[in-house]
Length: 269
Image 1 (cartoon, one colour):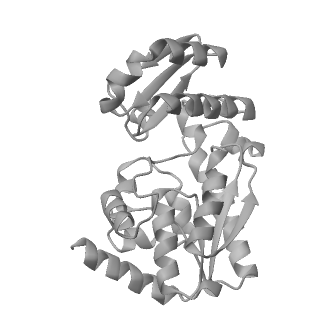
Image 2 (cartoon, one colour; image 1 turned 30 degrees about the vertical axis):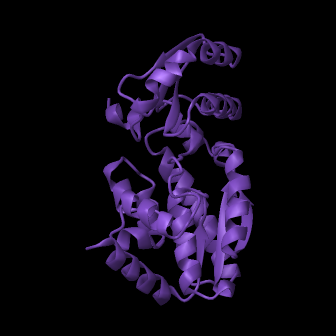
């Protein structure tokens, strides 16, 4: 199916909802979904909701506010407390399930209060290639994933976002900060905060592309797009100095480059 047909299909799906609440992270996928919904449904029938917690980078909230305002939809901020749930903080392979269950249960309650018929998630079909236990929550709670239903992959989202002149069309993929930490390593606010600060620091040395800092105790493993290797290494002294101030004694560059969910490769070992 060509992209134009997929986009038409997406709008038909959205129109059938009549009203909805969108889980809005300000990433490329959720911004494209929010814009698509705004093109189809009356603005009074739409609510974008951004969850704020210690597991997500702080700067994402500012971007979410600006994007929702530019699209012209109602926007609410809610707080979630994943770290208070021991099932999440012990960081087992089911961590994502417990997080998504709490979040989308809260979103469903809010949707009922706002008299909105459906809660929407912005997963696309490319997400199916990674280990995502949270996807079981979407099925259990009957959350709608219209991008997947319309057959849209990540590249489709980026191309269509560019056509819609969305500033997020080439925004690097983001993820929960807990994804930087090996399974069964206990999650704390201070550890998540250190990773957030470290990644913010590293972004100063990148022109563009993906970045993940994977935490291994006092060692960090940096994943970046391969086309950034030479420029990154040319600035290695400043990078090492900055990360050592944040508590990392050993700093490594992963020669395989960035890949989605790299800790999931050995998840069963």
